[in-house]
Image (cartoon, rainbow, N blue to C red; front, top):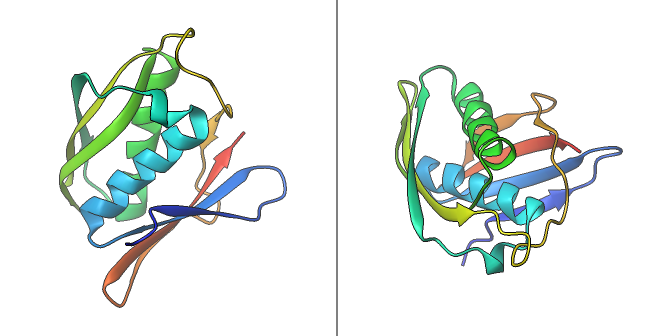
Length: 139
């Protein structure tokens, strides 16, 4: 089984490398990884659906905008998310359904505050049959 993500060394922030068998999987795994850093993800129940649409551009820009939109859902709207069904991602944009629930402090344990998704060393590339990305979060 392909690991969804791994941590990379970074001085002041949190860096991860994400993998996926397809570009859709890569984006799904990136969303999962970010929420796994933010909260104890095993406690999140995928009870409600949200639709996410990101406009087109370069694939790195779409990845950054995807993660920023998810972080906005967490910070502003109070969503904790667990399932990330990306059904379209290419240069024309992204469409996905994400599943989770509203934050409940009595059940959801916060782990690490992420302030922002950065462009620092942001990369998306294909290596053989595996899509990979490197992402640095400002914490």
